[in-house]
Length: 111
Image (cartoon, rainbow, N blue to C red):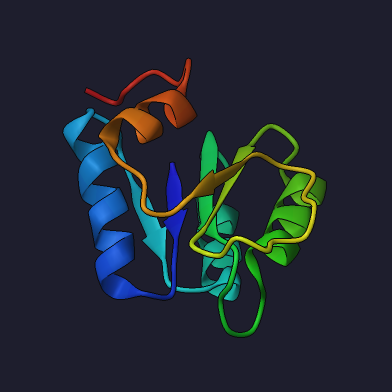
């Protein structure tokens, strides 16, 4: 899976929780970096991205990923209440390990 967040501590927290569940986790700090990761690793099963990031927003990234990699499940996260209606599931911040377990759903852990 690929975790994208411009806040390093928030990103690290999500990466740690997913890794503790046994997943191989890739990370990126912005949309452009995330697309570069996906170019190298089109086997990513889940994109887990913050909505509000400088440059490319999470919804903009999600749209690009949906067009280029339709097999990737997309989940967006936000700490803001007033988020535009999205075409993808939205998980509110703060989230916990149980929420991430539900997000991962039927994706098999790497270990």
